[in-house]
Amino acid sequence: MARMKFICDAERCIECNGCVTACKNEHEVPWGVNRRRVVTINDGVPGERSMSVACMHCSDAPCQAVCPVDCFYKTEEGVVLHDKDLCIGCGYCFYACPFGAPQFPQSGAFGLRGKMDKCTFCAGGPEADNSEDEFRKYGRNRLAEGKLPACAEMCSTKALLGGDADVLSDIYRERVLKRGKGAEIWGWATAYGKPEQKPAEQPAKTGEKS
Amino acid sequence: MKRFMTGLCMCVWLALCSVAPVLAADDLASEQARRQVEQPLNNAPVWKEVRSGQQNYTSVRGVDAGVLINPGGQTWRALRNGPVTLYGGLIFCVFALAIGAFYKIRGKIMLSEPKTGRLIERFNSAERIAHWSMAISFCILMASGLVMLFGKHVLLPVIGYTLFGLLAQLCKNVHNFVGPVFLMSVLFFIVMFVKDNVWQAIDALWIRKVGGLVSGEHVPSHRFNFGEKTWFWLGVVFLGLLVSASGLVLNFPNFEQGRLLMQQANIVHVVSALIIMTLSLGHIYIGTLGMEGAIDGMKSGYVDETWAKEHHELWYNAAKHTARHSDEIQRSPDTSGSVART
Ligand code: SF4
Ligand code: SF4
Image (cartoon, rainbow over all chains, first blue to last red; front, side, top):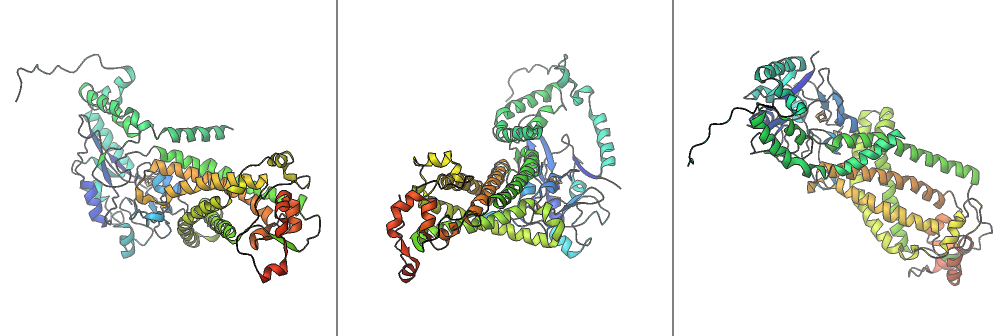
């Protein structure tokens, strides 16, 4: 049985938010709820990096551990799903989740948050596969249709990959090997100090450019 | 001991990580910019930054949406699911058992002389309303809070998912709406009772004799003895306000406070609630089962002369001129709120 995983390649993500849009459209997620988001670190500074993030379907899921009604369960493929009929909207999963994945349709006074909503790896919920109820509560069940998550399918640079962990790691490993310029990407210089050889000097600028 | 130390370290760390993010972010951003030239593809500074919990840019709106990794989550999980639930539950149960044992050994504290049938007003109706609105809301919060913290381990295996889901939903909503009622009644209560709970010289005697709890001796006191005063200051004022304030942080996510604050508030809330609940068992016991005549004051507002004399002698001396026979009181109940104070 495959173990489902997402991976986002920060060297490829261009912050187009295609995945975010694909997700919202595929599942008809209500306004104000975003199961996926793109975060840009050091926005506007040279070396900025973007990451698309949603539920990462943790092996030892913190959300599951803290939920007071124990409404999370794990499918055979390692996808973390939850039962909205049980959820009491306490928000604990949101406190615990490392990635800020759980979302709430409201953030009302007196803790009225509504039922928690999060990325399902396009695998629906406890209801019958592709039933109307399932779609209404959790969105489309693409896995049951033999498809992979819509966000990863949509990704224009294939930064975001979703699927069998073995396949993903092979793809990523190959990318790293092709892309890399040797030890630098493994952090060699980080461990043993700066490289002695500076990269080739930029040709000296002559005169001011306007 | 080791676990306790880890718990302590984590508490400190939880407090520290609220200040940590501001420290390094700028350095890391410039370091990454430098690396971009010197060692392209080496993103180490970025990934260090990600763990700092700082807000980054995102076009999605939401609480902490710009934070890529939530650094406090794991600490909160470990604290709440670990020592807080385990030791909190243990202490609560052990204390309940200890009270049971005390009842077995010491029995009900009886009056040593017969009742005279003449009553003294101890609490006027406003005071009783303040007490009972606090007490009732407290009990509701205690029951619903216990379901939410321990229900998963205790009730869920017994009653099943569907029933427990409904119960937890009910408990959560009741808890959230009754919470502010508790806060209001605590404030009302403090205003009503603060005057008679100020420490007095005679309290030293009570402390020396541990209230006569073991010896059975009657220690004189004014309107409230040192035990009651401690419960007032520690239980109602300190813990009551702490539990309410932290509860407010959790109860109003509409102000969009961040997760770190909510995690900290939750730990403060649960810990202070567990302490106040544990202590309340003692108060509830002595006010009902544990002492003859103690409940009367809060039930009807009147206590028997004998009770007043044995438990609050100095107050009795000042108030005995108001003592009347129960028949008289029934004919013309004194609702003027003229409880004698000393
Ligand atoms: S919601 Fe968060 S904690 Fe739960 S499985 Fe997804 S990423 Fe992990
Ligand atoms: S919000 Fe719902 S899913 Fe999340 S911890 Fe609370 S009950 Fe569980």
